[in-house]
Image 1 (spheres, rainbow, N blue to C red):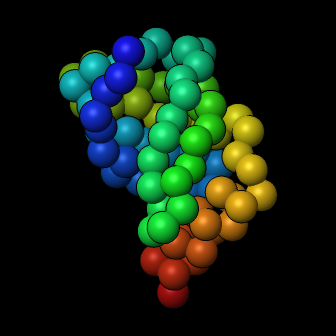
Image 2 (image 1 turned 120 degrees about the vertical axis):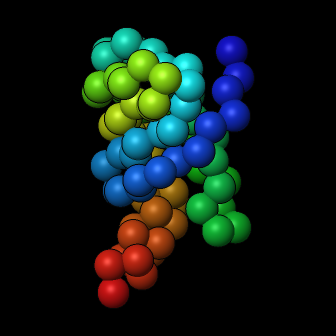
Length: 79
């Protein structure tokens, strides 16, 4: 199943995904999203779910390049 969603809160460890469709805590998702010019593909575990609002996920296997891309955006936002 493919869902078009929006990441509302991004960190180096996970994200909150705004979505009318959510999955139960413990579910594993494959995520694909773009951070600037870097396409990130990773798996994530649903940590909590809020029906018709979204879900919090924890990234499971970010590559070093993907982690660096996310870190640069997060650090820029915090500055």
